[in-house]
Structures are given as C-alpha cells and as structure tokens.
Image 1 (cartoon, rainbow, N blue to C red):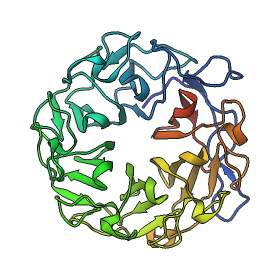
Image 2 (cartoon, one colour; image 1 turned 90 degrees about the vertical axis):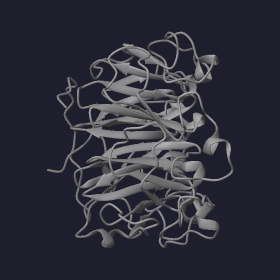
Image 3 (tube, one colour; image 1 turned 60 degrees about the vertical axis):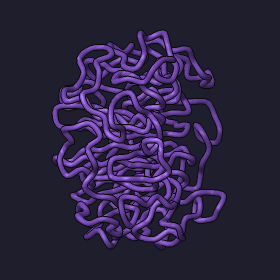
Image 4 (cartoon, rainbow, N blue to C red; image 1 turned 180 degrees about the vertical axis):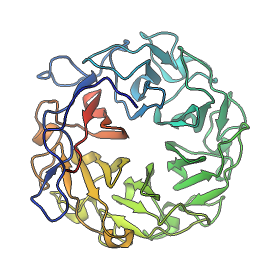
Amino acid sequence: MNTPISVKPISALKRPGTDSPASLLAASGAAVILGGSSDLLQVAVPVAPTASTMFGPRGVCLTPNGSLWVADTGHHRLLGWRQCPTADGQPADWVIGQPDFDREGQNAKGAIGPATLSVPTGICACGDGLAVADAWNHRVLIWQQIPQDSNVPADLVLGQADFSQGEPNRGTMDAGADRLHWPYGVFYHEGKLFVADTGNRRVLIWNELPVANGQPADLVLGQADMNSRHENGGGTPTASSMRWGHALAVWRGNLALVDAGNNRVMLWEGIPAENNAPCAVVLGQTTFDRADINQGNYYPSAGTLNLPYGIAAADDWLLVSDTANSRLLGWHYRSDLTSLQGVEADALAGQVDFQSKGENRSYGLPARDSFCWAYGLQVQGEIVAIADSGNNRVLLSAINRIN
C-alpha cells in the first residue's frame, strides 16, 4: 500500500544473537494516534462516540485500496477512513453499525440486521471485500466489496442462517460446521477464510471464500470433529487442542494462531489440510502440555506470554500482542519452523526490557510508544496498525526493518 505516512525507522531490527532487546517499532513511537486523548497526560476513560473517538477497539485493517477500518468494539461499530490517516485524531469518514457517529449500543439498540454489530472484534480484507467477526452476534459478516459509505449492509453471514439471527450455535448446545460461538478472529489468505471460533474452542477453515449465507466450513482445527467443542479437547493442552483461539496469521507459509487461554502461539507447518491437525511448534510455552501465564512466574521474560490476543507477520518476523503484559513481541524466523519450539522473542515494544510489564510501562500514563492491553495487529508495507484497546486508541507506527 502506498501510505502517506512518512516515518523512517530510527534503528533496524537486530538479528538473533545480537544485543537484546531489539526495538520492534520505530523509537519515535506512533506516527499517528487515532482515538484516545489528544493530551497524552490524560488517563484513558470511556468516551462518548464521535467520528474521532473509540472505546476499547480490538481490530484493525489496512485494506489493499488504501482505506483503514477499525472495529470500535465498545461502541459496537466499525469506523472507516477513506485513506490511511496522516494526523493525530483524524475523524473517520464512515461508520457501520450505528445510525450516525454520535450513537452507540449493541445492534444500534434495535433488531439485528446486515448492518448492525454487537462486540465486533477481528476484521480483515478478503478478496475485494471485508470480513468482520461480529462476536456477540455469533456470526461473521462479509462484504463482497470494501464499503465506500456508511452503513453499507453486509452481503453474506456465516454462523447464522440469515441476518436476523444471533444466537450462539444457532440456539443449540452443539457445535457444527455452520455454527459459531463468540468468533473473535477472522483472517483471509490465498482464497481461504479462517475464523477463530473462540467459544467453541476451535478454528474453522473455508477452502474458498463463501458464497452463501450459513455456508458450512470445510475444516476444523482444535476439535476431533465439527460437533465437538470441549476446552482443550476435554483434557490438558496438546499440539492439537486450544482454549481461546483469538487471531490468525500466515508466517512464511505457515499458519499461526494466538491461543490466548493457553498463553501460547501455535504454529503449523504449512496450511493444515486435515481436521484436528496438530501444530508443529508453540511459542510462549516450552512444551505442548503447558499453559501457565508467564510460564508460572509473576514477571514475564523473552519467552513467555500472558493472554496474547493479536498476531501479524512481516516478512521474516512474527509480531504478537502479548496483551496482559502490555507489550509486543517479535520472533525472527530460524533455519526451519521446528527450530522455533519454545524459543525466546528477539524484539520488543512497549516495555523497557523483557522482564517488565504493566499498562503504559509500569502502570504509567499513555505515551506514543506505550500500550495498555493491545489487541489486534496488522502490517501493511512499512506500517503496523495496533488496536491499543485499554488506551481507547489505534496506533499507526513504522516497523523497523533489518539492515
């Protein structure tokens, strides 16, 4: 994407084995801050909806046509910018999910429909269109073309039979190939649509972009079959099971999932082609059967995670929102995928070192280079977009590159 943001990295990422920690983002901090407070010394508080405010945003999407879309989760809406913003506090051009910029409420305080939302989270470009995980309506909405106006209705719905329905698993206790329960993540790659069906403890994969409402998925990960929904398959964590899968990416051709409930990242070799395929590698834990926050320690380290909720790939680097530690971690690809098992991260953002945690660095005030419960991530060219949820804002920052 040709972005109008002109920010050059201060220093390049260092390869593994050099001085640590390397800086994951430009040392100058965010180039653009959207939402939040224009006064960086003001602690973030819930705010009334306007075209330039947000409340707990969890998803971001820089689209191929140059627009930016944000899942403004707490206001139950999507905000859209015609072009990637270039100034702090730049107001959105479009809103979907509310009658106007000044109103909020689940499903616009009315009936569920093709342009209403209840806790939207994950968001991604898919083909020529847009997909959104409408989590508390237990569905995924798909626009076949990226919207160019406010309240454009979605063209397709997954997880429900039609746009008027919003019950978990279509009102039953059972999962199925055509049902969803709290889907928090959505991702598209080379024709395939991936959904983190968090409440059913699984990932669903459509091998081609769906063309009909309620179309069943082709593949399931995390469960033995399409009808099961047990946490960690009814036992302890394994290479096949998951607890709270939340967001997905493809890193050098390998599927990656942040499994927030097991405090780990799962990496498969390639794109799985069979139900319940085991992952090859985990990050954040030393073995497949471990799930402790920060590996059982109060303070984090370069190899631990605490409720990771966001993930994105940037060439040889994998970026992870280590949400409850209020930091971003970066792993550099090794010689092969299996050599990554349990390894420590190589780069850091949001904290002064790998052993520190706390919102806005040790519970301080927000800054251009700090986070408070960062969620969704996306990389487009030299820009990384970060949903800094606890600070009620989105950050657009320059990602450092290797010399």
